[in-house]
Image (tube, rainbow, N blue to C red; front, side):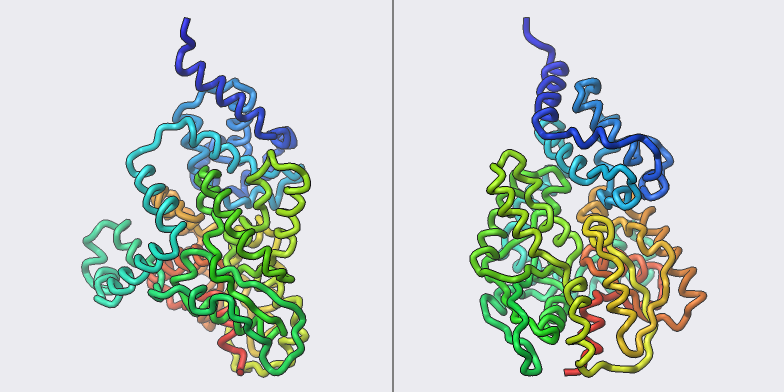
Length: 450
């Protein structure tokens, strides 16, 4: 007698979960300390949309007690994967790793909408994997910006009559350069500035979207690294980190991208691999999670590369002695710092960026309440879950507006992740708040006088 399809799928799922090393899920003691830190739980108030509730769902799949249906899939899809829960979990549950493994398994069994299939084909398997495709898209969108259409839509009566999602998408558009940063500097050896003896040689990770947009971020990163006494190399054959693929469950593509990353950076014998995008940095520090069946010797190689990976702000903060000897603009300026989730929660980096920014001559770092609250960008979450992403963002925008009333002298908001930068900038522009949003590297390099 043929096994019913539902039972067959449940059996296959259980087998895959049990082979995927889910024992860490048992660390959860259901204390609930994660609830108040979870954006989706705070917005929706549903236990299934909390870390604890999602862990129950994952455990049910692992133990074969739950069937795969929309009641299980939807809450797992709605997770931002911001990992704020990990920062308060007393048991050390690796929630992000468990969620991403779960999404990887479910991708093989769940039905996908036409919208999901299109997004995967065009973005994850197409655009983000191809430097040429990204450069072409960048050029086209740069021309689109040049026409003035986005500005017309967002700053005229059209912004009041067109669908809100569409208007927000125009605010969200990055500043595309139309050129590849890594091609510009491919494998050049960039010496430290000021005649300094090199402290070491580092490789700058350029990523995918950031390689062709917001060009000043990478340029500023080069300036800070060289001023800190490092030789810098930009590998010309590097690619995407694979974070978006992992978040969406496409672990196969993510593994291919991880191999490409290692093949690009490892042979160059670099002392450090530098990232300036929080999401990329978090992914590049956890690549070994993609290869659970690899032998220990291979896992050790991945971990060695991960251990050499460091966020730009973390490294530059540790080299403050070199930077303090540089000439800095001392004009007074007040700034906010918004902590990207994947820098603060996933990488555990929070004190150093604040210390680095606040210790610069003339700079006053104004505390921003709930700066650790997710902005709702979360990779491409704001594209696939726009309503919930918008609600999460609105809370941050309200906090910024209220704080600005108390500190009207503040002119700049800094955040160290491109997705967060696009999202917060879009929210601020749409709300008409007079703040400039920029990457900390751009701010710091702008005050560093050559």
